[in-house]
Length: 102
Figure (cartoon, rainbow, N blue to C red):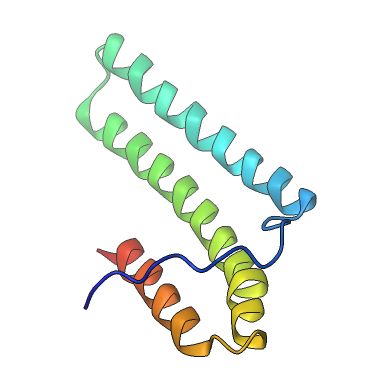
């Protein structure tokens, strides 16, 4: 299956300000956890502790992804379907999901 071309811009506001704020909070958390991993390496922390911190950072990014998938469905996918581009919208969405789960 080829990669569909991104759909044209239908609406200039892809992510509402409130959702951007929530996404930024989640990214800040993930960033802090990644920085913590660096500090743990420098301070010679046990492998188990570092792996636990890596898992926490991955979970923070997964939470950000879930938020963006929700937003994507609410805005881009819904608008694409309403605009009569259901097949292209569906193909793009499936491609995005496949990329997330590999």
